[in-house]
Amino acid sequence: MPPPRRSYRPHPVIEFSMAEADSMISLPTDVLDDILSRVGPRDAVRTSALSCAWRRRWEALAWLDLDFEDGLEHKRAVDSILLCCPGRVRLFRAFIDESSRIHDWLLVLSRRAIEILDISGSLTLPSSVFTCGRLTSLHLSYCAIPLLPRGFKGLPELRNLSLRRVDLLENGQYQLEEIIAIAISQLLEEPTLQHVDISGDFKKWMIQGPNLRDLHIHSANDYGWDLGDLPRLDSVVIDICESLRNRDFSKFLSSLASLTELRISTYHQPLNGDNILESLPCTFINLKSLTLLTHFCKLPSILSTFCFPRNAPSLESLKIQVVYGYGMGKKFEANGEFQNARFTDGMCANLQFVDMTGIRLFSNEMSFIEVILSKARLMHTLSISLSHVVELAISKEDGLKKLLNYKKASTDAEVIFEGCTVTRLFSPSEPGNA
Image 1: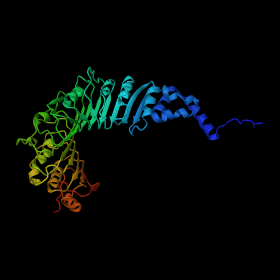
Image 2: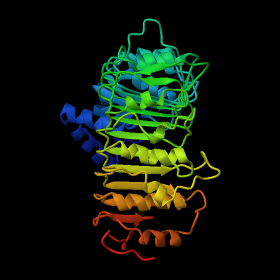
Image 3: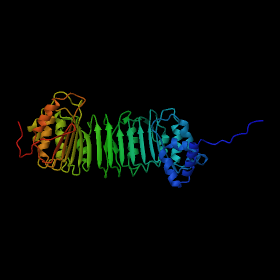
């Protein structure tokens, strides 16, 4: 006679966890949706194992964020999630290789009204990437961008566009112009172009848009872009190694006159003997924050370091990032007398914060520090950080001794040297030590 069958009872701890999970399922729908959306797609699906009540709960989500930034080792999981969950997909972020089913995913994402698309990987994207017409943010990295499909209707809701280390086909600049231009998006505010490579010869093309506020361009080359009608442009970053060598630099700078924030490389040499960096064709009347990627070795870069602040009467913050390796060799000697002569009445009248990084304690650099301290009457903080990549011209101790003897125009100025506050500087009424 067989022994009587025992009824199965889960372990008390497991039983308690199951009861707790079932009590959570009674929470309001919007609360459950918020919980499942926050835990991420993998953990949302894993809630199916909690109890029968949870088995298909994740499939009822109104929207999902699919974030696979760590890679797509489980491609079938993406297929299952997109197939089972009929709701909207707000975000899709993934590193993808050539073997992925990206074309099929993009078609499904387009139907699910995808808003934020962030794709990186060594692949050539299919043209279906441009079928996602509800995008508000598009971020593409380390991939090749296809030609626009026929009948492309644009990305009318696009606000943020970021292209980083991507390849465009021959004449791709015109495609990029079309993506950025007013005809594609009336709402685009923040395009970032970082090392965008264009095949073949290129001609001038235009960056324009009625709502474009922030523009970031980082590149080893000038790919012929120009600035068109940008009525709301407020902040610009231009970091190009061979900066603007074959264009009308005066016209380019004039198009930036209304900015409040500017970051620009000035370590390049001017062309055709026209030292445009000694005098600018416009006044940056609204400019409050300026970052210069420069050095103090050659005359053009030294002049530009004075030129921009001289033409920015509202300037409050100046950051100088010293870049070595460009224009190095025999240095132009710009002593204190030479640099002091570059100052004009009213220059740096509102300057409060100066941050210098990567300096080597060259005499030209020290002379600039001495002059700026003696002229900026509203100076609040001058911060100095040394280069940790190349050798210093003098020791830190000798540099600090020089700094301690500089006069300052502002009695409130705090000087920070390598993270430490310098406690003894002289105001104009006090004599400095020899």
